[in-house]
Image (cartoon, rainbow, N blue to C red; front, side, top):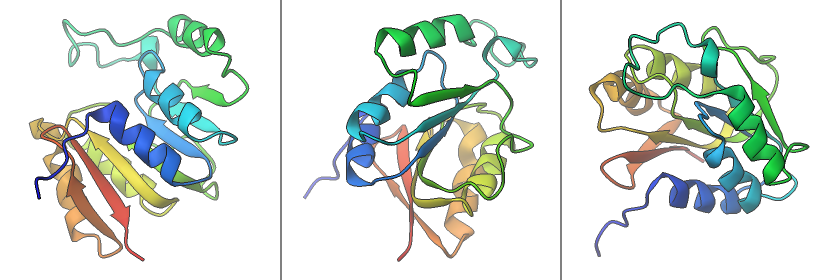
Length: 171
């Protein structure tokens, strides 16, 4: 049986529908990934951590759009999700939310330069109860993140395509 190949949004829709509870994502750009999870998981609150235009590492993203909070919020309002999606316009390291806050699922799709994605997984692993979707696993900067998942005895890694993987909490 062939391995299914889901893109990021298909994977988020499936994960969103599979679990209940709040979701946190690192890297949000225009908010599309957050809206996919919000639609798939009614009642959940989605927290989006992304500095957007506050991005100080603009040299890393030359030629790429780093996002804009006004565009993000307009997209969220246009889709009538402003009461369920919260933008935290900060970096993910150090962790910007209270440490005791737990999430059902998460997405790592922020800075793609090592060691930041690895730090993101290390920060998320103790506070995410079910699954962490990891985008852009084909980029060299994600190798440390994938290695951190593989050596963590509480998580297992499953690839859904050449670009998307999911870390599942072992039961």
